[in-house]
Length: 196
Image (tube, rainbow, N blue to C red; front, side):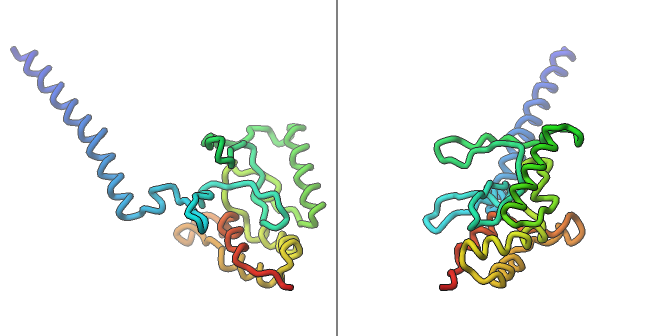
């Protein structure tokens, strides 16, 4: 009879722990996140004036037009088209520093930056570890000011002010480096009026 009691006790303990860890705790965390930090809990999504989601402040997006600040290069291909779902893939290329393919890609990036009259910086040439970094350095943003100002017919000092307003500081004031979120900066650009 003691084996049956122990089995019964083990089954009850397993069900109680499963209920606690698989249902109650996740539900509690979901509710806490929605109440305390709803923006972050829902992916830090940014919407346009029509209420459509256009991106997340946590995930980098490619910008190719001279009218916008360019992001870091990425080794992962993720969809920005509404017809194709986002793959959620992230990661680095895993190419060694001496790999000819990596060197060719870096030389191509440098050539494109120089052709656009932009002083190459490390983060405009090299990819991030995840391939989805939404930030560029302050130096990388400042290197693009003249190109964006010319394309938009805006005074470069106005764009420099936008960069200064959109600098994200160090996490907890000690971790990481200050940077500029490219999506937020490009959205702020849309508010500037061209000089006629």
